[in-house]
Length: 115
Image (cartoon, rainbow, N blue to C red):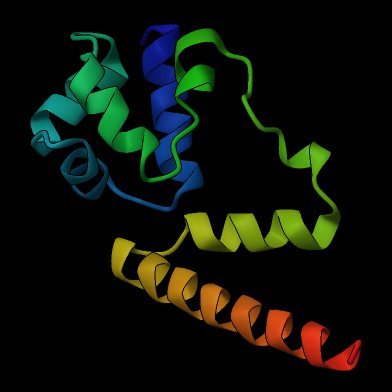
């Protein structure tokens, strides 16, 4: 296995996905995902762009260096990010909608509290 393949596998496992699920995020079949992870083939930019939209740290996959380390977040923030990353795309969308609605409610309360 090459370094890119190893890091791609690590990202897949971090997100709690199997090869088929992860490949689907990148628009490829399970077989192609397996080949990427074994270093038989290298992923193209369209694949990397697609998985980046789903929370994969592509900078880490390519270079071994994390783009946004959870260490830079407060522990509770890091836990939220990790939970989010483990969710299916549908559940992520629900979480995003809920967070946006809660932020709007909070914004409204801040405005009225100062009046």
